[in-house]
Length: 157
Image (tube, rainbow, N blue to C red; front, side, top):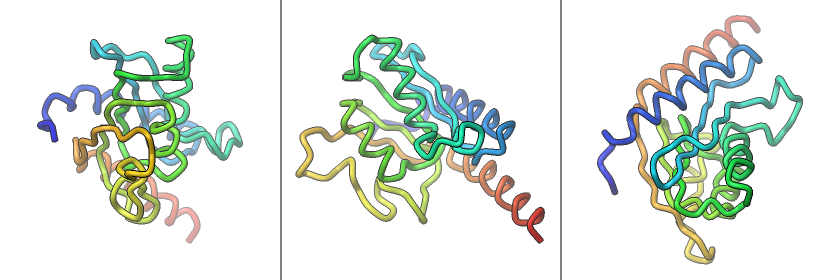
């Protein structure tokens, strides 16, 4: 595993995307895709509510943007940085896109598919297994999610 510090700046960009998701009343999850040189080639935030799209997860949005920027679906050499551990759909998407590295902030005990509930990205039956760096700025990611959900719970009460 690589040290967490080199990933702090890209994670801050992902956190900014997560905060922007709040405008659409979406769960604050953000993602960025970096190319081999560390240049951002795709960004995304949750858009399930704002776009009425069940696949509108930050990772999928960012992967689509990166693929469009590259002009191909293979994202070999790229790093996906996301504020929350990917779900099974997103973990599958990053494996299928051939992303070389996944960097994430907070673990997701309810839906996480990179070690919490499942471990899709390390499944030896798959033809591609990205490197995983977990826990980057996890406290910031967790605090943003906790604030969002406590606010939603208060609104429903």
